[in-house]
Length: 265
Image 1 (cartoon, rainbow, N blue to C red):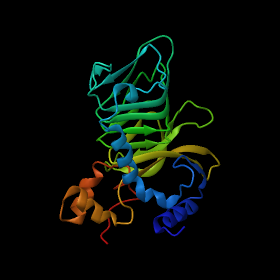
Image 2: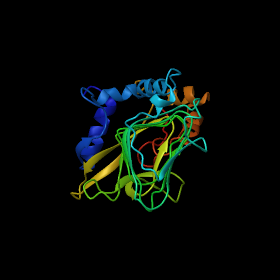
Image 3: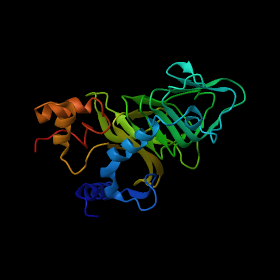
Image 4: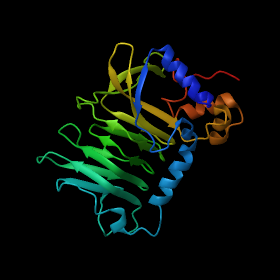
């Protein structure tokens, strides 16, 4: 791989004695350097959701399968054909839920769930999809929290009770300094952030266990230094201030202790 960022990732895995088993990202012909195109990929998906030519019947595709005891809301109101102005997209979605109880899916403007499976149970009764958030090829069976707007979840498996995939692992919160730490722990609730693409991958760690690990990327141009991108996004003139301002919205990517702390140059 020519990409220096990819080489850094490979060295990190080797140093930690981690064997990469597979990544749930991309399709035929995808390769590591494609990560630089995440912003473009997200724009293509959002442009599709916002296409004014789409009627309600196309937005609530006939491939959608939702049990009667699952109610879909759009901006706080029950979604129906009486809201032709609603901007959303549900396509090839399968929802499963116990026969007893009531379950809810909450959509906001620009929300989309495509080619995904949602599995409700007694503890997971409500799914909130944030504004401009798009789920593609995901399987969700536990709570999710969307922060900010404009995030992508691509091939995310959040199925902690699945004995094949096992628990979902994410960076743990450091209680001493208010930052996340580059150490994984199992999570019941998965946090998704706007302006990022989130996926999951399976890793075999040094202890021989296989874990379903959350991986995030900024929807930015990876050929541009992160400091310059932070300045452009935040409109701050100082790189340090821009970085620290940016990390507030991306706490598991920027400022992660032991992984992505700020250093000049």
